[in-house]
Image (cartoon, rainbow, N blue to C red; front, side, top):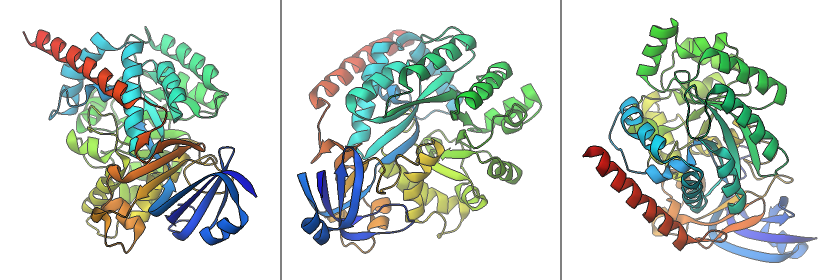
Length: 443
């Protein structure tokens, strides 16, 4: 058997079946797909390959899936820290967006974010931001798997004038990328407090017709709950249920404010939750009851949120935070074990996005989205359990190689398709512009 590539590693964690660790195995890649997973000794006898990669001391895992982010906001990293959510949004982020959002800003911010994600082992991200068509173009250039949020809010932006305009642009975006193998567009109404009933009903109708998921911030803060009670006489989830939004295609992000009845309702509807532990901690938004959700049968994925509120796009760090926070919130050291958290960062994200047949686990026939982590470092030795070591000890600097759809995009810590020096130069130019603008605003 001849394949395009053959990767040998000390361990492979396929994620499916759950908890499996394969020692001294190899993955064969052909035409972007996983052609075989077998013991290295057997692979050396039976498979020839155009490219052979030897990774002793490394673990191969499915490419990580960042199930919620705002990629262009990497250019706002560290600009307005240590503030509560609504102050952060109203006084800092939204004014900056009003002044600066443009195709150029989105392109440069998206490039910076994608480079960071690839260098930290992420192969697929679910985005929510303005000019998603530009983010899609950058993703194609970078070779990343991307889910583009077709954003919807009630107020105008540089991207669209009103709710109808957002929806029209959403349909154009869907048509633009509907046949692209690495790009998918889904509906992304911003939040219950920023989208009124009529556009949300339209989203539900269109999502049913086009069979697309709906991605939305929900129950992120106590203030959101209180405002919904004041304005609508009910909690946000109750309002969304009345509008028909929850269901197997609904992705609710954050969910730090949940009671037991709401958890049961989420499970019954088949909705998905994306947990963003570090952003929620930094903004003091609250704690998502992940263990309760998982026990109820809710599919929980992981996301970083944007780099303006995290302040990184490091899914390895997010896994560690999720595991530790989940134990603390549940007051149970057995809650969120390492293998479960790895699943949250891979196959659970794929399920939420409707991509589980393509990515999220290392299985023959699936896309070769693979991350290699070097565990032969002082920081990850001695080694008793490679899965635990990845979740609790490994850092993103140990990500050595990344393949997306069989393409080698990070080779020995070096970006293959992206220009490292140019990315730094662009970030520096935006830094100067934003500093000058902030000084002018303060004067």
